[in-house]
Amino acid sequence: MIIAVDGPAASGKGTIARALAAHYHLPHLDTGLLYRAVGVATARAGLNPDDEAQAARCTEITPGLLDDPELRSESAGSLASRVSRHPAVRAALFAYQQDFAHQSGGAVLDGRDIGTVIAPEADAKLFITASAEVRAKRRHLEDSHADYAAILADIQARDARDAGRSAAPLRQAEDADLLDTSDLTIAAAVQRAIALVEARIRR
Ligand code: CDP
Image 1 (cartoon, helix red, strand yellow):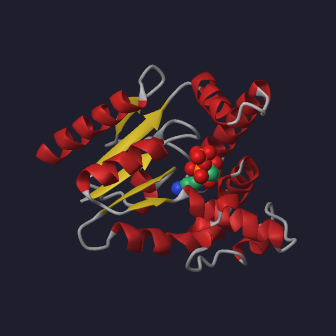
Image 2: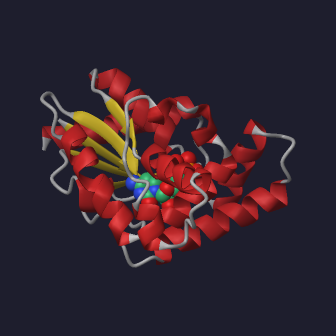
């Protein structure tokens, strides 16, 4: 069984994807980490993340690379969003994600284009969302030293970049179930996600 979980930053998609993977005993891939790895590698090599050819030179995913704690930083998130606009970068990461999705037994993948581009044939697709203000508050709780207004502005800028780009823009697949987590606790959101997947696989 392949489960695709897409949505904007801090919507809860990562938490929900991990919980679904545990519930169904499936391996999980956070595809955002791939773009974060490319963004960080590009910056470390002194190359320009906004230049397609330069970023595309840094797309090799070596073992252990995705465990680098640096990938979790806000700056890695911004770099990811810049390199992820480039079709050559997306194309270079395509096979890795498809292979992960099609391993025997299935998988859960979360990202921006899993249900639309990477695994349109997924058995269940969830599109997780929440208001920009709620998402900024969640990020602020994780890092109270950061400025709330700056986080909100960053989330809005990232949303605009992710939804407005021409290569695999963030959008809900036609056959995806929408789950708005703005007013839900984590436990309630996970419960609702499992119920949506169950309803899909029964159909
Ligand atoms: O946790 P958060 O949503 O902030 O970040 P992420 O999921 O790690 O994604 C970081 C950036 O990578 C996003 O802003 C997207 O631009 C990009 N991304 C993408 O284009 N396609 C994916 N499948 C996953 C991430």
